[in-house]
Length: 246
Image (cartoon, rainbow, N blue to C red; front, side, top):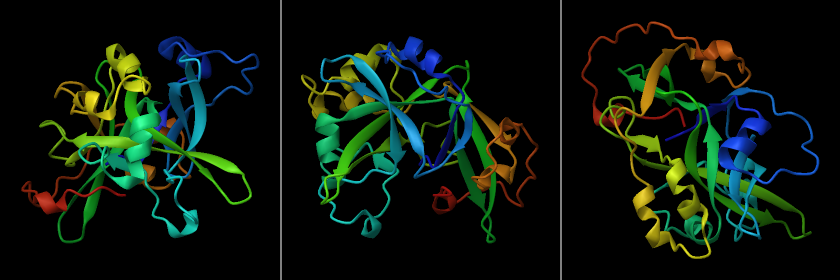
């Protein structure tokens, strides 16, 4: 799963990297964000009406448009790649509103032992730069007509190098595949299934960090500082123990 991530790129860097349409007024500069959590705004990139890429702020936690009361609906921060095409909560978004979510990396927790002690890790591209998660977006409208854009991150099975920490991993869309993933006009969901697969084992660098990241209020770069984790009593990890903080 992916329940926390970071993005320290500026709007200018996102415009250049993703070839986004530049608004007439760029507005306030986007500050670096080192501990993004569910319900907070995240950047989502999708194709506009004219087919050009646009970047928008969307609430993290997808709400399907058929939901009557979001307060009574489970927050959907992730969608499984294996079932996103058929599952009612994601089916429409997979067909009409596929997106890319830019990130500098994400956090995951490895839990072990009877006390469920956990170790936190900062996971980022080994070569640095941005990583692009596959995402889905939905616009939910209330009876009064007000709208809110919501979204989630698509996850896939972990690759072998990450599987020791957790059995799920964000699905990464590579630059050469941006056009095909975002093209919801001519590319049916079944035609982009091949893009939702684990990245190569050498793509990510996994860095142990302190439990300061557990608190959303801790949101400066210090939470990404490498630490030495205390070794657990046993190195044997049952697959049922591989749970995410979320």
